[in-house]
Length: 404
Ligand SMILES: NC(=O)c1ccc[n+]([C@@H]2O[C@H](COP(=O)([O-])OP(=O)(O)OC[C@H]3O[C@@H](n4cnc5c(N)ncnc54)[C@H](O)[C@@H]3O)[C@@H](O)[C@H]2O)c1
Ligand SMILES: [Zn+2]
Image 1 (cartoon, rainbow, N blue to C red):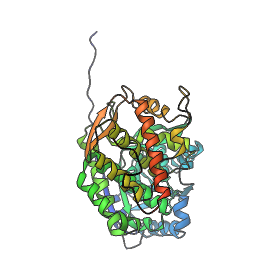
Image 2: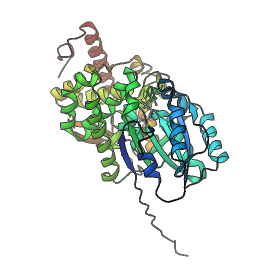
Image 3: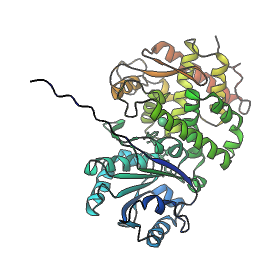
Image 4: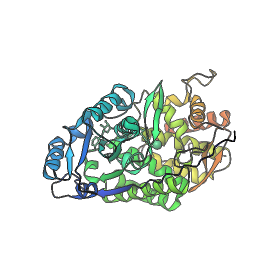
């Protein structure tokens, strides 16, 4: 018998809204967007504990909002709370609790699960929603810079398992995203800064003018200028969304993952640090490492490499951490940073493909990484970092590090 062939095409639409005080009684955006037909929509709400701690009135505000718009939207129970940060993705019980609530409260594929929190809580809730009933609708309300400009606007969700980051997960676009600027005010300095690393990443890959903008505005950004941060978030989210569509591989069927610049090392070092490093901090290390490698391999001009390191360090990112240089000599040791290359390849499938820089705003893909050059890059970053510590405030003029 002849084989039967089929092509399945599915189109997803979703919007990212920018607002302030999403749950203020007179802000009808959420209600209006959900009132697409006369049937009231059921919503199960999940909140990041860290957000709740900094916004103690949030749960009452959410419940009051739903009561005020009862004819259009119904909260099925008081919001569920989960510890924020990587713990949300490391504890397998969390997914089961969300799925059980979906079951108990009759959340169907025309109802919504709404996740309010940092990237970790959004990833975990997104995974639970994507696997219940083979996928219920997800509303993301990202509350960190990183989640608003990167993780919350994309199509991926996941939890960690078997000691591997994002081992379990799905590609499942959200139904809606609401970026509420109000939440950003309570971020710790670390979380304010972390999201800037993803913006630098996407700027380096795709938009030199955006890199110039971040470089020019580094100081006010660090001083928490909200208007500038909104510009940064908007452009970064836009580049991210454009990539998902224009790259025409939103579900990453190919071996290449161009947006994951610096991420083979970032994911590994995050894990090796016992998740004491924020994702954005690990991304900054990964960007510094792969930029240094590209410079040593002769792809990146020295002045571009210097600009990258200077920008990262001026924003307060560390460019070296001991996890980068441990266990190099033990083959296949999972504590060695280079095992991150194997894990990256395994996660993607196919050939190892990593994005590297040929210039600011210019990216190439390589299939081979020379470990000796990578070790040299790590040693150079260690020297760079200690020269900064010896001369704090002087920035990096390159004089303290070897160049070639
Ligand atoms: N799905 C994707 O495509 C994707 C992309 C990039 C990163 N990620 C994931 O995102 C996660 C990192 O997310 P993140 O950087 O948003 O940090 P996070 O979710 O780890 O949160 C960091 C801390 O900030 C707290 N917090 C959150 N919002 C707050 C607020 N408004 N005020 C005060 N505290 C607040 C949290 O409770 C937590 O303690 C990682 O797990 C990473 O793997 C996913
Ligand atoms: Zn990332």
